[in-house]
Image 1 (tube, rainbow, N blue to C red):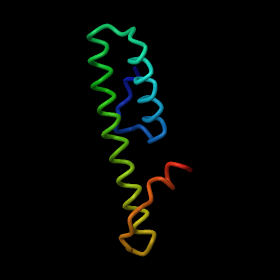
Image 2 (spheres, rainbow, N blue to C red):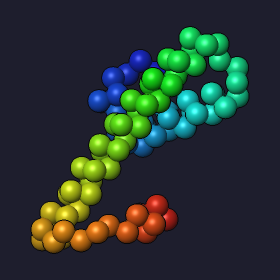
Image 3 (cartoon, rainbow, N blue to C red):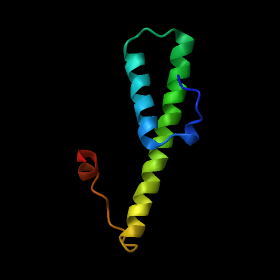
Image 4 (cartoon, one colour):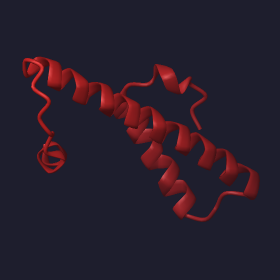
Length: 79
């Protein structure tokens, strides 16, 4: 696992690392301690990604002249 501080990771990098962690855990080859460490890092990555998405949503609201419109997540996911 990358020892880089999660706070320093860009969204795409954090998401790629999270996907790698999930893939590794699904393989079932990790020992218990490594699984626990991977789970902890994965949860931290999830929180980091969620926070970045929330900040991006806030920026979108500001760009749209402060109109608090609901963001269509399906449209964003399709992009």
